[in-house]
Image (cartoon, rainbow, N blue to C red):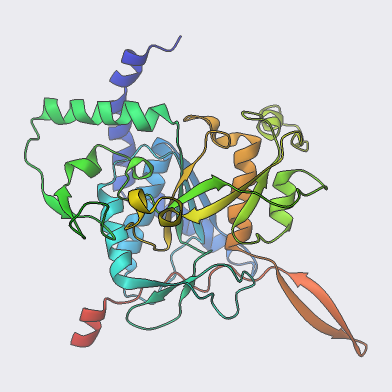
Length: 360
């Protein structure tokens, strides 16, 4: 039986364990070794996934790595890190988003050779190759009704602050400005300590919102469709009832995954949060680190990450990140169109800060 108060009392122990694991280099070493082995194959792709306190570990590992690699011509040992309902405070995320904001400016024009003509790009302020908007280095998905990170986490963190006697807080800058009258508001860091990134109105920069389409796909289920087709204008599909877990249940029984139910086709769009609600999110930073609010129809509460609908969303994000590119080849004098999958992002080498580049 789940007892809310008792569950909350286990919060600090689990959080300390996750933070201790994230603080050493073992996770990064493991990721590097796996990635090194995978990249022996030319078309391999390193896709990291972490959930809850596992999301905290992954989030801290990739954040520290990106900050360390800033200005170095070295590609991080992953192509995409996908973090689901992370049980982590927003202190380091705020710092990283601010760093990325100082390194990149958003340009709505697509990268010229991108197969997705709807996505903009993140332009390095110090010059160099842009990153296509559809190829961020980190994506965090946060369910809008997640009671563990939306309620238990701030309660547990607040109690920890009270019992620990932490009364003095730094004043820090909000990334990208805010909805406060003073642009680039300076607020207490306590705001970021008590909220996870996907529950902070200062950090959410993308949202999944319902979308109208002329017609729905007729073949397969939403997972297969999203995986086999490029997204048009950031639109993707779900096809299963809420909380359906056909694939996950089959995996638990070591059976082949069946097609998900197709009784509830819905269309969704991944949208910059400022376009959805300019009053709430209009100033939030548009950088290659997506912090995405997701409706409960797709991820229900904290543990609904393996629903068929979220699997369809993850398939869509994978395909956005690694879109199908049409190429023409000549065979025996005839031009043939074939579809291939290009390499993921060119690189996630973080550029040098403009002010440091001038000093060199």
